[in-house]
Image (cartoon, rainbow, N blue to C red; front, side):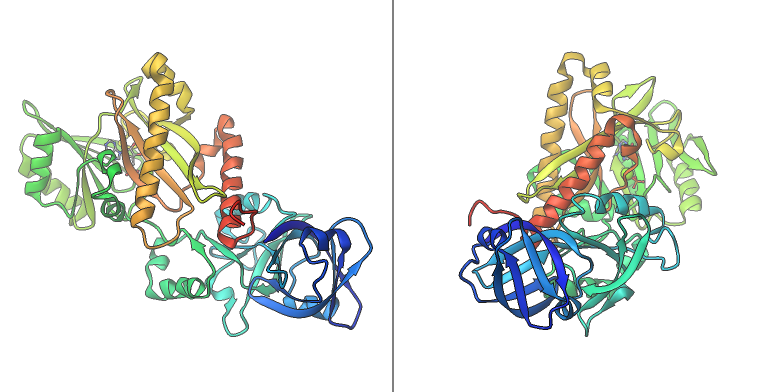
Length: 455
Ligand SMILES: Nc1ncnc2c1ncn2[C@@H]1O[C@H](COP(=O)(O)OP(=O)(O)O)[C@@H](O)[C@H]1O
Ligand SMILES: [Mg+2]
């Protein structure tokens, strides 16, 4: 396998000949080849091959064949040759998401993030966004939303991609059987799709149960009964009740038991933090049952005494990605300090973004580096163990990680479509860019557009 980059030109010639500059033919080890199959995503054309005495990596394709290939644009891309017979242009990286056809922001609130992803090595890959309704299976094409170099977007019919980064935004839509079947069709065609769907909190618990990394997961119960809640409160003194399919801290309760004073429930209601006290467990439960109707779909989780600054608990977002060698890396870490009286550390409830170095120095002094290193190692183990038990391809994870005063590392939640709010912190902007570069590199790995050491 040989891999390089090239400039693609389209000519007005009528023949079925591909012209390569001699430099490019040498780089691809094709100097003696007469016939090739040129591929782009799901499309391919058979061509004769001729060399041009010209320096630099150039490829000239007759107009009619570039139409047949549905080439999205001219300019540069990677090119890879296999066995001296097949040439692939690409990679074509499709971002699966919801698309708003008429808008300047075709991917809604995700547009800016997707646009910055598409800027990573934009001269080496074909990026586009698409939604399920954009795919034409019988033609093996997709009506893609493609960034224009001068800004704005254009819609074009192009081949199915080499790899798909799933950023579908709706939990409920993604749960539909039809959506599973849709995604499965790509996988059946050998098109890798990573980050299959949203995780429920309980899914992650099940994926980790029995693995080495399970020591980092607080004790949890799904659909907890009153008796289980009581028992957990007696054992741990405080617990979290969280909707298994929830996010953004919505619907979360923090329950505390104090043998002398009774039970406390802390939660958020209409943009305010509420704290209620109950002298009897039964009154706590009847209050909860009135508020949430049923604890079905809730997870009760052992409360972890997080490190604190100014009496506000702090937790961390570990943004994990795969790299070009298919290994997990910690791409970025943000620290989040809870707003006063808030049950969670989300920015929307008054939480404040900080860097992990700032926080850990203040709390652990000279041990800060050791604690951070150990947290990174734990996060990598957690990602590896989740992936090992997961049926689908994973390329990115967002862990909500807590650290307690005994330096123990705990994971509350794994997000498979992690948000990017930590990258708003000025000190984390560079890590934000790095995280996108890693995802690009992982796309190269999945689509086999990388120089492998083993070939
Ligand atoms: N078991 C726990 N112990 C201590 N704090 C917790 C626990 N579970 C959640 N939290 C706090 O609440 C936040 C939100 O919980 P999380 O499980 O991430 O739910 P969500 O999906 O709403 O983000 C966490 O980031 C953490 O600050
Ligand atoms: Mg969370």
